[in-house]
Length: 343
Ligand SMILES: [Ca+2]
Image 1 (spheres, rainbow, N blue to C red):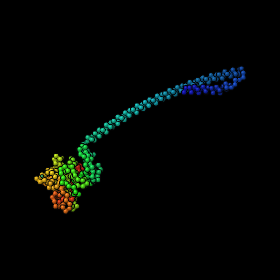
Image 2: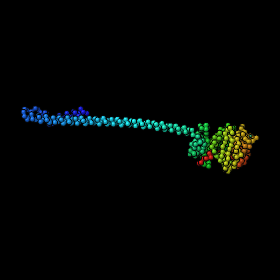
Image 3: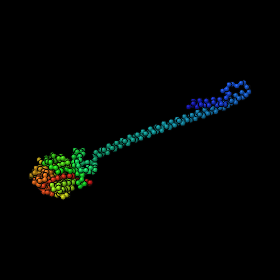
Image 4: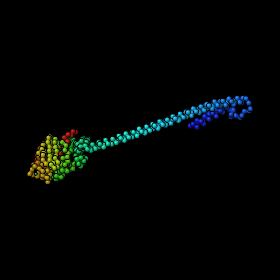
């Protein structure tokens, strides 16, 4: 920068000299002694003054250049300093972000662990039709309940009645087609049999598990004349297999009669497993698996007899409180839901 300024100054001085002393550029004048000497002296004075001015100007320019350079250097320093600060702040932000992310991850892991450790009685868990209903599944039909690692149970196909008296019912038994035999052994009654859309027994083990919470039992009956009645027990539960799935129930209501009360506090019996309170083998006599006393006031897992044959036998699907000991019903459904269920 300084060389350029100096060059400019030299050119300027040359131009000034040409303008002010045109004689320099001309052919030397013919000898005119006195006036030429005087003129030369005058011109030299002017040149000297100009030289001083040029020197001053150059020094001024140099000074300005120096100051500008200093300014630029200071500016560069400031920019570098700002950049450094910026980097430091960026580093601090990155550090904070990584710390936040680490904490966030830790919180997520803790939430996951808490969710896994939580008891499976929360309203989130799906273990029956009532919890499905609470999750807005409100259409009656077949559903698959997910397996439960906590209870060590596999997934389970169920039929949910989402309409009757507010819905939320898990159906545990149905008789309506009549092609499935209910004269089965202990293991089959334990695990369940039949088809979930037709005639079936859900299985004592599943019923035992589903009735760990306070449960309501509803029994719906239909006769061959097309009339329907129902019985409800506000309390219903089974004991475990070691205790032969003993029946406990209470709080009857309905219009079909209290014909399961006689079976209260009795063990479950099946073919080849006589747990009843009788010298007879009730399961063999009544052709089903049931909580036989000595033997029956109802026999909902008895033989299915069609219209015509339905009044001629004592091992049919009977409910003494409505049609007596020799009338086999056309249709039965047993269903359960939690006592605290609210539609
Ligand atoms: Ca017996």
